[in-house]
Image (tube, rainbow, N blue to C red):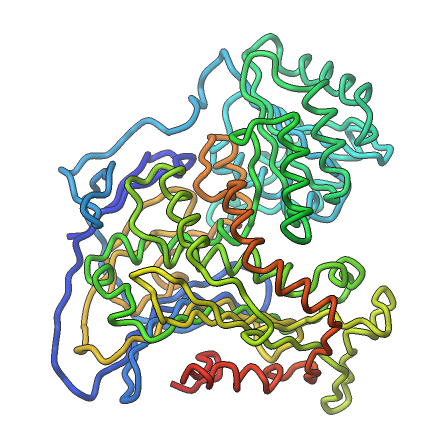
Length: 571
């Protein structure tokens, strides 16, 4: 019997895993594929994540990817809290359900949480942050006493902010009967203050307004920096000096990019730490809040069958694939400063790789998990140009439709060599993974939209099993299911957006899914030499048609390690 438990309240995001699985082994020679998939649809909307098993005569594969139809699952009827991991596994304990939420008491009359969205007039705030905050309110995950302030240079009134925010709010599909009422209640808690990001006086004025709303309660303040990185330090300095909480906690969420290389990243961290302690800084990578990534840890640590297989003895290669079927439309100017390696590989994919490859942590505490991620990153070989293929999409005509080249964007220089595609082979020099190629591929304007993790095993006996699977949502609960599972078919509940989970974690002080400064240093150390060499030598990317599978060179890179990319439908 497999189980996991946490608070019954939605705001409890800390978790504990139980590790037993129902497994049957059959030595049928014709069965050799094992597939775990998590696929998001091409069109925006509610995501679907699926686990799929299938047979093949050629390889043994686990996939986590982005729409496959699957079969039914059986439910775990009991839940058990787990506090520690021991001897590399997660032990079970007697069934019990926690009733109290973790982090703060949502009914505490003596405290309040004030959330300030710095850069409130920008697209990220409008499309992601305010809708995520409303979703948390709608689910009852915000404390009883909370206030939301928008802060930006734009001249707006409270009514203007509420009107802007109201256009992007949506309600959960399964709870729409009181949608309008909830929106009104939420918008009544939203206020606006106009000011400069480098003005201590303007932040002092914000502080006065926050104190009015806090009404003498213990004040906890969260600042979300939805602004360009070149003004992070100014905003942090002013908020720290003029608008910090007097008697509660103060936390700051920082959006990527966290620099362009090791030097600029270290300079940014040093500047932020002039005004904040490390445990006040929440570096957000929204990919770590996605259900697929959350389920990765559950798949590995809550299913005994996978832990002994999770090493070079049984795994031939691992692939991390990110593809988008659209270009940089509307973001060309920003993207040209960074490119696909900085934008996707150095952060999103590398963070997922670290979670995948890390050793079993001592406990489920955030610091223990992040310690293991840092160890993996520090064990990896520095990337060189020989292990990387870069590409850039060019114009392509399909029937009557012509798709633009990257350099057709008016905000992109005509002679730009910025890669919109990259593939790389990475290696981890430790006992568990020595010699196993970890292949990464990320690109824009490709033929498909997906995020996929594919694990190819060496020859092992066929396995028929049921696995522990995370129930989608802001909490952490497990079902026992067949390996073949489609979230949309199994669970009627809408899957939360990644920003909801990460905002909730920041409010609760849960740092597990946020990036620590030494993680950031280790990640940049891997990629900075490569990035500098690409820019100094001005290496020309391989051009690929818009809507294609990408540069041919990526296939030769994989073939060098006797691997075929899994997203090509070739096993």
